[in-house]
Picture 1: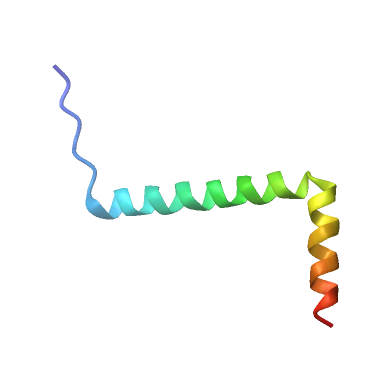
Picture 2 (picture 1 turned 180 degrees about the horizontal axis):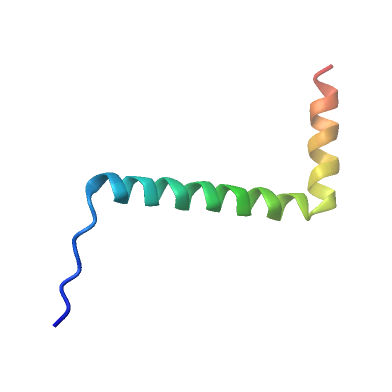
Length: 49
């Protein structure tokens, strides 16, 4: 039987942080592929000025 070392708490935190960053980037990319969303977002931002 192969015994692998247990990951440390620091390694798990870094892995979770990396996973969250990748998920946020994927969601952002998904929103940028929807042109209607970008137009609506830019119109709302422009309305602030």
